[in-house]
Length: 155
Image 1: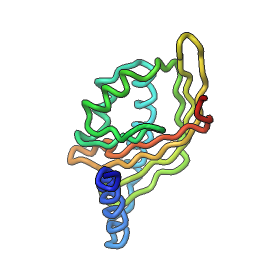
Image 2: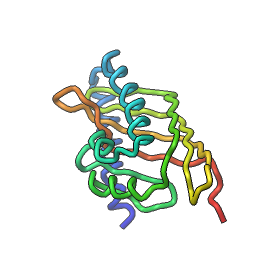
Image 3: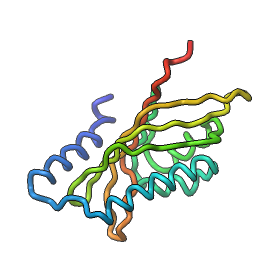
Image 4: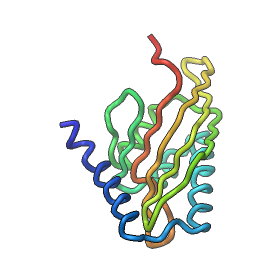
């Protein structure tokens, strides 16, 4: 069953590899700038708690892979997951790499966010990878999003 849930991820990665092998064009400077701007927007929407606008940065069938939890698929389910997440007062994304070919790109980076859990502020740091697919309108919504905390799992 786990393999079935992971199949779309493997399909996306396979497409990315195929794009590299078929000579698809590398990302343009405009594409890279759009992906960078999307990271800034994502952080702003998270801090604002604007989940309905945030899920619009994902494809309709996006796959969200939070740490220590099951896969979340689709905008409605991603929004429900985010609405249940503790309030975030600060979110900083540091992009370490953007690359891709054709209509597929990935962004790899680190994050730092301040959460409020039962009135206690907690700084969480970690890393993330996003896979984006370019749309006809030039936008680059996320199709796969995974993040992992650097903090140990609380006992």
